[in-house]
Image (cartoon, one colour):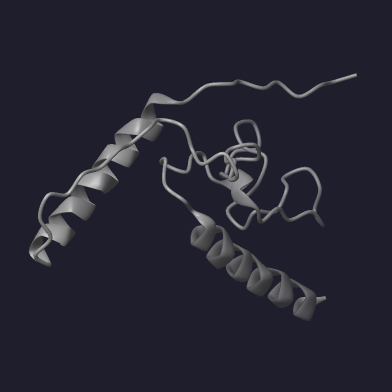
Length: 115
């Protein structure tokens, strides 16, 4: 029986993206007049939002979902939680999940309208 393969740990890209976002945020805050800005970036995504379990892409050999978060192998299965994203970049991505869910809902509505 096939089982899931789990990797526990942070991907180096998470910290890189987190630092890039922190640097941009500091610049914006400085332009707004903020002083004595401190940042703290860790490589791990927020504990309550996991990402990457069902990555999306064009190739079924390297991704579970297509660009519309529809499973390559199950035509009626759409996944709209955080698992479609390869990483959260060490920042909360709740709004990205919401926005994608609404986008996918529109795709599903269009698909049902064609049926």
